[in-house]
Amino acid sequence: MTNTIMMVILAGIVFMSSSCKKDGTTKGSGNPVITGIRAYKASPHDSVLTKANPGDYVVLQGSHLTGITAVYFDGTKAAVNTALGSDVNFPVVIPANIPFATVTNDQLNTIVVTTATGTVTYKFPITAPAPHITAISNEMANAGDVITLSGTGLFALTSVTFPGNIAATTFNGGADGSQAMVTVPAGVTTSGPLVVTTKYGTSTSVKDAVLNDNADVLLNFDDKNGFTPWSALPLVVSSVSNPAIKANRGKFLYWNAKGITAGSYYVGDLATPTDGSQLAYPTTISSSEPAANLAVKFEVNIPVGMSSGEIDFDVNYSHTYAWSPWLINGSTRVTVVTNGWQTITIPLSSFPGISTYNDIKGQPIQLFYVNNGSGITQDVNIGFDNFRIVKIK
Image (tube, rainbow, N blue to C red; front, top):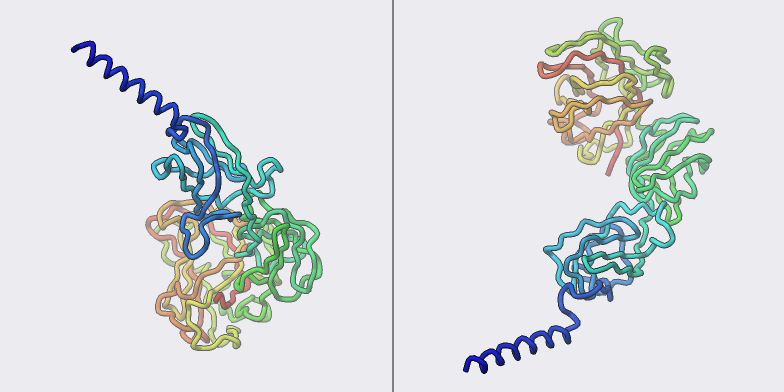
């Protein structure tokens, strides 16, 4: 009886072993195989993909996909979550930051999958994004200034065109496409957007990224000057030698004060009042225009590091917005240096109590520096110019 039982058990083991050998789809038993790519969400389009874009959520289909350790799209590693996959399907997001400008020919249009048992390369087109410009570092730049364009797809640049159809001769896109550096050519005097062309498309800068927007300037300390100083300081100057601040467009407001200690809630030498009736508020904006569609813009030059205090923008001595870019999330202190003039954008909706353009139009605007009790002793050297209100939507 005992021998009979042992024979039955052995026969079962042999049968199971034979069955496993015949099953070519046993998980993890072979090199990974990719047979196709489908969209993670099929609706409203066909789920089978013949190409995809950076940032798309896709599903790799094939076999032996259990235990994936790495997935690369055009040479860029994707984040993988092995808990989501199976032996025949594996969901993954195509990296949004593929540096197409530096992708080699052998990496281009490839998906490389690695598991514990092997690696497979699958040919599949990843479409490079067309350029998109969301911001210009200095919208009032002069000829010879180097400006930074921010956005996406700013690689493989073939041309950059300024208002007046003036082409730049010196430009360079970043590897990840998030920024491009451009030298402003001579002769750019008119207002308008920038046009960037890359190997993958053409883009015009967005509505609120416009060069030479002089029409919307309400205070420039030159021909539009509603500044009404209470004392000899602060100064309106053409340049500063130490620390060096060269003119952006004509004269500018210069704040200069040493050793402002924490707990200083008013610094008279920096107080900047204006006369609302003398400010050149734009007449092309409807009084009923929602504040959410508008922004206050200006250029600032911070040659020496700022890391404490706040600059209060007051509308008619109320409706205060506190600007302190050196405080991240209101607590983490960093040192800010602009390396030249830089355009700042503050949504008008950030000013409490301002709901439409009519709430600010014709009103005086004041600037004050406050170094509250949680700050540190701070030297202030800042240039301001070209305050304006613009439509951003």
